[in-house]
Length: 80
Picture 1 (spheres, one colour):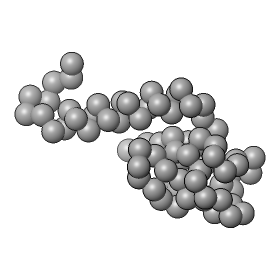
Picture 2 (cartoon, one colour; picture 1 turned 30 degrees about the vertical axis):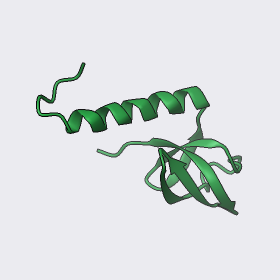
Picture 3 (cartoon, one colour; picture 1 turned 120 degrees about the vertical axis):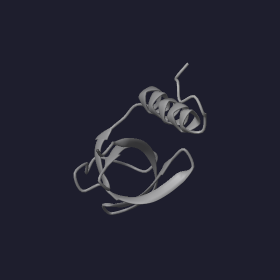
Picture 4 (tube, rainbow, N blue to C red; picture 1 turned 60 degrees about the horizontal axis):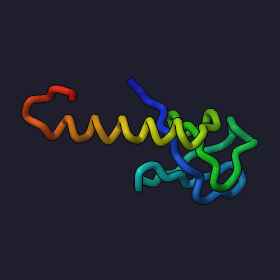
């Protein structure tokens, strides 16, 4: 299964971007989202920005990812 992750565009050169999500950075393409600008939050799927995302929704997703990460470190594997 592939997930789309919200990330902020921190570098942009044409349709080539570097994005950051929770301190993790990687390259992505904005070809499918030509209106994307430096500083925008975008949803990244399979290396492509596929939609703009608002700050509040991005933060909710990042919090869920953090919760999943912490859950994997526990022995009980039961969510709170």
